[in-house]
Amino acid sequence: MVRRRTFLKQSGGAFPVLTGTDIFGSVRERQQRQWSLPIETVKERKAPAESYGLTGEEEGKDIIQNRVSGNSNGASRFELEAFFHGDGRLGMSGATTFGTTWEAPESGEYTLTANYWGHGSYFPGIKDPRGLDVDTAGTGEVNLAVVNRRDSVVGKQTQVHLGSALDPRSEEAFEKIVGFLAKRLISVYFGLVGVIIATFLMYAFEPNLQMLRSTDFWIEPLEGREIDVTFPARAGETYDIFFTPCVGFGVESREGPSQPYIPRVGAKYNLDSLRIEKGDGGVF
Image: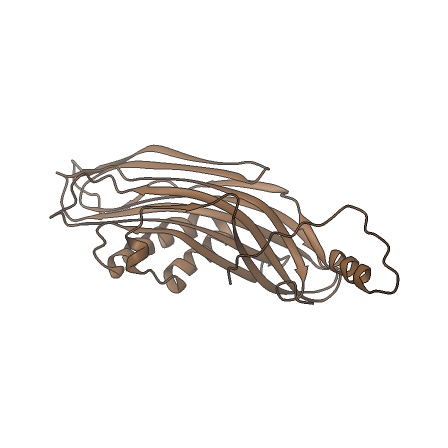
């Protein structure tokens, strides 16, 4: 469940001594049950321009841009663009995974929260779509996952920000293109987290026509956005934590080789913080 909440920072300052009240104790207890986590690893993940059905001599594809970058400050950028000429399908995708580890001090239920912001746009690359037999779509989402040392996922959540389709023709056409993107690229090239994102896009994500009309998104940096997941943990066990922005696009053309397309998606995400609290959403 994604919720907007005031960002809580672990305080390092001194507290006044309050005699005869339990305020000091409650604040100290809350601090002891809350952990701010650093970014320990950054992985940039690129998928090639995968295609299906391009068999004619005049048909083909070419990558114009495939730029994916991430740094230890939590910033990631995506610039994906391709040339597509023919009768068939084409897809491109990229992701950045910010990782860290955490050891549970005691057994129980915990809530992991990521605070972030971002913006991005999808350009179908078709000047005049009217009358053309073509479907195209772009996606942008983030995933938050908790994995134990047996590579079992104990908590996961995916939030979609961009789900754009040309026209849109139908939700079914969008789902078909996103299914190709998820199965042929995201689940193949982006590891365990890619499988989580792909499974969500194929089976859990329910697009709506209002979302399909949007070709961009903007999350205000000062307000930010939060994604969280509650998971069970065992005392002394170490968990791998991953925050993964992922963007991509797909095109399916039935126009033959006469109509070229140059789809492009660009985005920026910034992970501001990762924190863990004891209990369900910080309610102890």
